[in-house]
Every structure is written in C-alpha cells, then in structure tokens.
Amino acid sequence: MAKAYKKIEIVGISNESFSNAVDNAIDRANDSVRGLAWFEVDELRGKITDGKIDEYQVTVKIGFQIEKEGA
Image 1 (cartoon, helix red, strand yellow):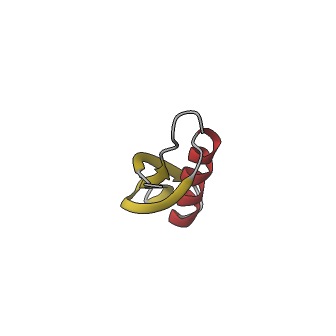
Image 2 (cartoon, rainbow, N blue to C red; image 1 turned 60 degrees about the horizontal axis):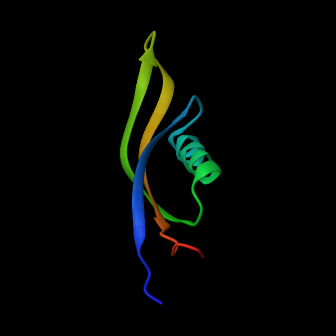
Image 3 (tube, rainbow, N blue to C red; image 1 turned 135 degrees about the vertical axis):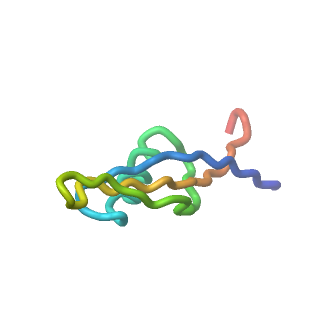
C-alpha cells in the first residue's frame, strides 16, 4: 500500500517555554487531524513585555498520513 502525507503549519503559544508551545501546537492539531506522524520546528520567536519574556511562539509543521477515501 502506497503512503502519502500532508503537511500543515500552525503556531503554538505558551507563557512557559518553547517546548510547551510545541506541545500546545501538537495537542491542538490532534483535536482536529487524525494520523499525526511527525513535526518540524520551523521558527522560534517570542513576545517581550516590560523587558521580560511574556510569550513563547513556535511555528510547527506537522505531517500526517492521508487516508484513503472510505477507509
């Protein structure tokens, strides 16, 4: 059986850490997409408020297997 994958890009956000932002992105994607298979961290950035890190933002590309219609 041939396999094919699709990639989506989402941004995860956390007030705690980059790692937590990745977890949030994957958790959210898992709510609406089946068959998550892998992820790539594409971009790290954050928000600074009053000279302190206020928010961690991570752009994540997530791959999932495309299911055959009727499967």
